[in-house]
Length: 399
Image (cartoon, rainbow, N blue to C red; front, side):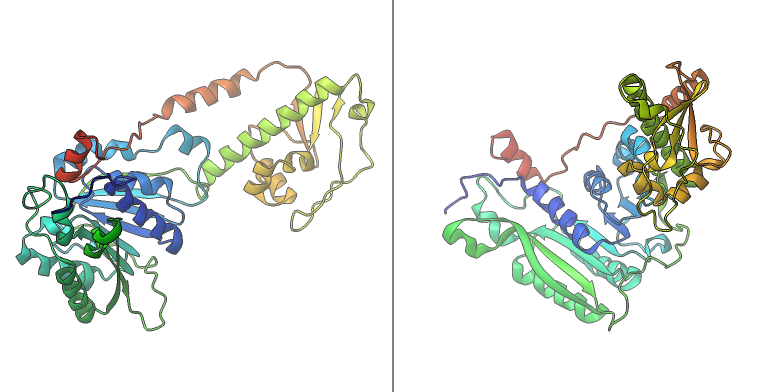
């Protein structure tokens, strides 16, 4: 019997996760639930490639594994320094995919990566009814080993993992998938990852994948407006909400940080140029700040000194791409800064006032240091969750 002699590159488990990531990038689901999430590897990847995801849920029956890994899903320092535009909540539940729970309804995407083969054949029917009938998500991705590929794997005897209860051929997997589609109103496309080369390609992919789409007869497939219920069977083990600009407090702090950074940059430019560029001293009292309704072009205004302060025109600060992306218009920038105690504006709200010297504002510095101490950096080293066969290949150099 001919065996494959070269390893999969990238490794098979990475290809499976990448398949889900690519799907999320293309279809941009808002609510995603991963059954059999185990060590949360896919969840950790999706939080960095989340695109439009607002709710990310993991479910597994192994409570101990979830408790040992859940903190790896916590926000990192970078998530606080650069909050995302949209909200993200991550939840982990102890529970079984064969049990109904109201908190699992209303999802756009369900992923079951190398899960179904760990069920007893008698439980597959319950799995189908719960996922496709009760949950009725917009889409489902199911991956499972292709038994026809097994003879090509060197040293393999029996199933690929000691916990597998069965491994389907392509015909068996497709027969189950078509039956599910007929019963619950879905369509399915078959693909996979891990392809053999040359004449061995006839056995199909090492991992076969079914992508199920719910038939809505022209209705919007997104169910993100569905109200979620509290869990009645599953047990919530972990929940975290990521910082986002949807939270006004976070938005205000982020905006002010960017404004002060840009203003300090302009002040330093003024210090360097004050001897060579007399226009920095010019007081543009006759110049009006032009607030375009859509944040359009504004008249250029110089930074200038007035007494012991430096006056920085808001349009100059707004010209920073990061500030502009946050507030959109100069008018909104002024409105958002008006009530913020961390910044000082002139009487008509068109200038940011800074001290002319280089002394640090100690009170503000201490406040920022206190905030930083509250943020805990969590390691996000991706842990491999893989079949026994893949681990054997890794140990022998064939990863």
